[in-house]
Image (cartoon, rainbow, N blue to C red):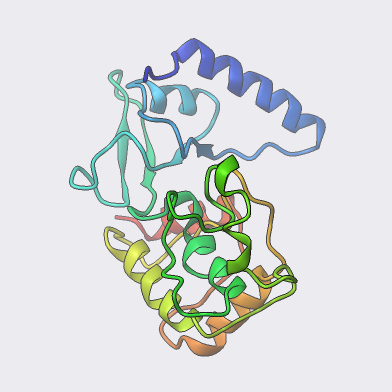
Amino acid sequence: MNTISGEALDRNLLRGHKRAGEFGRIMKIGHTPTSDGQISQIAQIYAGFGIDGMMFYRGISRDACDTEYILEAPAGTQILGLHLSAEFSRASFWIHLARMTLYENSFYDGYYRWTIGRLPCRRYDAMAGDLDYHLLKPTSLQYFNTNLLDEGLKRIKKDLGADATTPNLIAMDGMDSLFPHPNTVKVINYCNEHDDEAVFIHSNFPEAIEKIKKAVK
């Protein structure tokens, strides 16, 4: 796969700023989670739009950097880079915690299973269209099973904390093919009640990035 050209990124950001401005606010955070690589000038392009922090997970080996590091363009422009978690990056909260509340049984292990089918993150297969549904409660959007959340708490902290250099960990709720889930607030409340080591906050990108900026060396 080819990486996107600098011109295309500039045009995308120009259009995005114009559209966001029509709604009254522009979120100055670089968020390119699913690109298969980053062009060398990405820090320079973002900085040109007043964006000094970028979140992503593809294009750099986990051995090459920590979660937080300095991303530098050839011209010397530097911004804060945040390399999202190794396992589930853009969907870590959803996979480790929220999704677990939909299932009755402990067979579910929190991982993608593209080939054997586990809703709602499997590619559609016409030959196995109904295989996933027996895994869910009929009223799964209202169902809230806490039996697997303690194990999910262990996994998400291990996943997010593996390469982090600050105590501020970003757990992403949802992903590119999912709606916000009604159990999100319930899960956050459960985690705060049952985990004495961490505080779970329903936040947003700008607030999270600012906390990391203040904590990072």
